[in-house]
Structure formats: C-alpha cells, structure tokens
View (cartoon, rainbow, N blue to C red):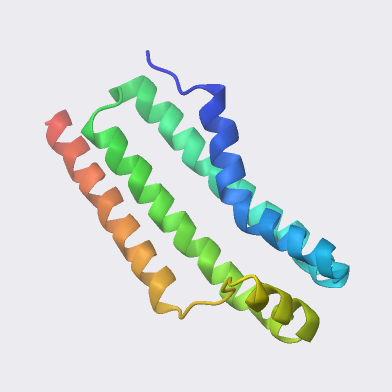
Length: 145
C-alpha cells in the first residue's frame, strides 16, 4: 500500500495558501490590515479545505491504485479545479476589497502583480480539472470491468 509523504501534505497546504501568504505580506508592508482581517478566515478555510480534499483523495488513490496514470489524472484534475476555485475567491472576495483600498492596490501594481483575472480563466481551469477527473473515473470503471 503506497502512501503520500508528509512533505506532500505540507507542500500542498503551503501551495494552496500561497496567494494568502503573498497578500498578507503586502498588507503588512502597507499597513492595510483591515483587508487582511476580512479575507484571512475565509481564505484559510477555502485554501486548507481545498488542500485537504486533494490530500485525502490522493492518499486513498495511492493506497488503492498506486501512483499510475489514474493517480496523475486525479492529481492534476483536483489541482486545476481547486486553483480555479481559488481564482474565483480572489476575483470576487479579495479584488473588490483591494479595489476599495487605493494604497494596497497601488502597492500590488507597483510590485508588478495582478490581483484579478476575468472569470474565463478560473472557469477554464475548473472545466479542465473536471474533464481530467471524469477521465480518471472512466479509467477506473474500465479497470473494474
């Protein structure tokens, strides 16, 4: 029975929290802690919830199936889907707060970063992730037959 290492757990959590870590650094640097207070709890909840779902699914898949093609489809499908979800959270929760805080907006623009995308990008990521998850399901069904 294969297992996923603790490093993968930590890496997944840090990866999904990366956007919030970056925002926290900019908020702390500009003194705009009100924005950080508004997004920290929902941001941590969505990010760690997404990371936990990825880790649990992959732990079960690695144990039941090994780390073959189906495992990789699950991995990429979930990552794409949940990164798209995080983009939507940023677009619709964080970006309006940044827009309403001129100092924070200027600081983000000054360091050359974007904080908003169109909804087409997250939707595309989520569709691609869903397609990979569907393909994994089809391969699982074929394997069971």
